[in-house]
Each structure stands twice: as structure tokens, then as C-alpha cells.
Image (tube, rainbow, N blue to C red):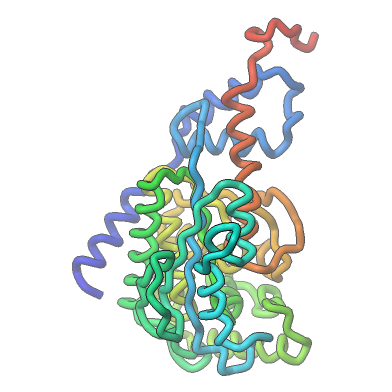
Length: 362
């Protein structure tokens, strides 16, 4: 990797500071005075306190929101680990960026983002196809898909770092455009395979306990997928003590890109809303690189993919819902945005017992 890229990466890591403890304490004290029984808003109360720490104020007011969908392909699909062919990846990128009567994009993430007022950014970081130019598509392609992780490292460290910094740059632009809440999303046929491999290595867990059906594969394909991941881990091409090495060895370009998005959001003191399992694998690498990243991560829901619960436990994150989602694209993260905004609004806008002249509990 170039000296400049390495220096930029190290500076990004060093810029991430823990959430502000004083603001969180002030938020807890305000929560105790609001016109409701203690704990009556459940998880929203803890979310509001965490938001106070992120935004350095007892009355946080996150405004704009962005979902950044990164697309990349995976050499491991040649092992037959997915129910869908790799040609779906470029086709879905075209769907994300298509002009429709409702606005940009005809995918689930576009429809949900329009509903909640989030802006969608789409990046080609590693699609194994030459995509047509589009003003709706960020072309930051590092290479035409990863290598087959069963046989060799998926990426070099240089390629990995390039993808991370590309994610950081686009997240910085989204923040400059007004986003306080950032949702990393992904599209890449076969990407639950690298996500499972990263999770198994980073958490030291058995392959079967963190490898699910992804796009809905049958029993025979699931068994093959598990064996492919076991073979990749058996190469011993990386160790959990070197998180960036694990990402290069077992990951994907869109996973590395999402890591960059998360790191930049934390650096800029913005909240990252995690969708599902693939995003969780990037977060595991990020939290190992800089533990303070956890302070800026908010788990949308626990998705249907095997292993996601283990990721959330390791990250000490509580999911907001369980809807059986397994689509990806950042859909779950976008769905969570109104919950996060509502948590902040209750802390910020509810009156205290004294302000409302409401008698407190005797």
C-alpha cells in the first residue's frame, strides 16, 4: 500500500474518539425528568442517550439521512455458494440507479428511502462488469470482483485499503450534503460467504454456527458453502490479531468500502445504522481496529441470517426489531431511521414534569 494511503488510514483511525460521557449523563438526567414513567419508552430511551453521546449534546437533533449502497462481486461464487448467478449484481446496480416514475431507483432500498426521506448513494467498488456511466453511480472500482477466497486471499492489503478509503470519501460527501445518520448498504452475489468467513475468524466461532442460507440456498448448497468457508479458514491466510489482514484475506470490496463508511461517520461524529449480517462483518473488523467505533454503531434489526446474533453480541448492540429481513441493500437500516429520529425527538422535545406542571410520582 502507498505511504499516503496508509497515513490517511491511520489518521482516520486516530480521529475516532469515544462518545461524550458528559452529554450521555446529562441525557440520562433529562430522561429521568420527562413526563412519563421511568423506562416507559423502552429501548428508545437508551437510544436517545447514546445519540446524545454521539452528537455531544443532551438534546440531539439528527437531521438528514443517507444510505450508501456499495456493490462488488466475489470470486468465490464459482464454488456454487449462491442461489443466484453473479450477473444479478450489475443488474441490481442498474435497478438502484434507474429513473422511475417515483424517483431514482426501483429496488427495495430506493422505495423505503423515499418513504423515510433518506438520500441514496450507489457506488461500484468491485462489480465484475463494465457498468455504463450514470450521474447516479459513483465509479470507484478497485478491481473486477475479488479472487476466490477458498483458494487464495480475496484481496491484497493495497486493494482493501483502497476500498476502505473510497468508502470514507463517499461518506464524507454524504455528511457534507447534510446526513447525520449514515446507513451502509451492499449488493454483491455471494457476499454472505465472505461475511461468514470474517465472522468465524474474528470471533473464533465454528463455521456452521455463523453460516446461513444467504439468498435462500438448499441444504446441499448450504453444506457446500460451509465447506468452502472451512477450506478458506484452513489456509490460515490471516489472524484475528490483524483485522485488516482478515478483511483482505476473507472479505469483499463492498465490505471494505462499508468499513470506510463507518469509520468516516464515527470520525465526523455521526451515527451509523447497521442493516444486517454483511454490514456486521465490516463492523467486527472496524471495532477490532478502533474499539471506540462501537459507540457510533446502532443496530437496526437482527436479520434472518445465521451468525448475526453473534455479531451483535460481540459488538454489544441491541437490535430494534426482528422482521426476518435478509435482503441486504441497507433496507433494515433505512427502516430503523424513524425509530432513531423518534428517540432523539422524545429526549429533545418532551417537557419535563416541572415544565409541564405535572405532578411526579409520589
